[in-house]
Image 1 (spheres, rainbow, N blue to C red):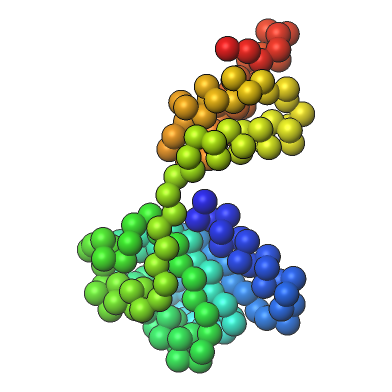
Image 2 (image 1 turned 180 degrees about the vertical axis):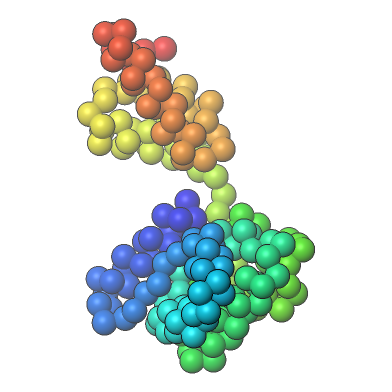
Length: 180
């Protein structure tokens, strides 16, 4: 969900505004790059990389929890980009107010922007996702099986894909069509 939306934003910008520089990354990558920059004394390169794009897309900001130096550097980058009128899009698994322990300055900056909660897909949407995944994999997926799988996998789309993969492989190994 969240990661797909960030990719959609990046893809839209690449098509609509090809001259725009977009930086997409997971928070873990930011932290790893920061550690490497500190170790090799290349903080200027680090700040130039993250402080220069027109749009920064960062996934899973909750992974900054407990990483004070990373939060401090991210705050610096955020302020630099915001001050230059650049766009910043972040995703996380909770609203900014629930990011604890977290630097309150970062939480308040996240609250400046638009916060959107993404609900898990309903059963009909999960069935449609399964049908599309099955079509792409050329798997004959009866509707009753799709509904059964969709009723069992409620957490996320990865769980749905895992169930579809499991039953498709099992049916293939047994040489039988998918059925309840």
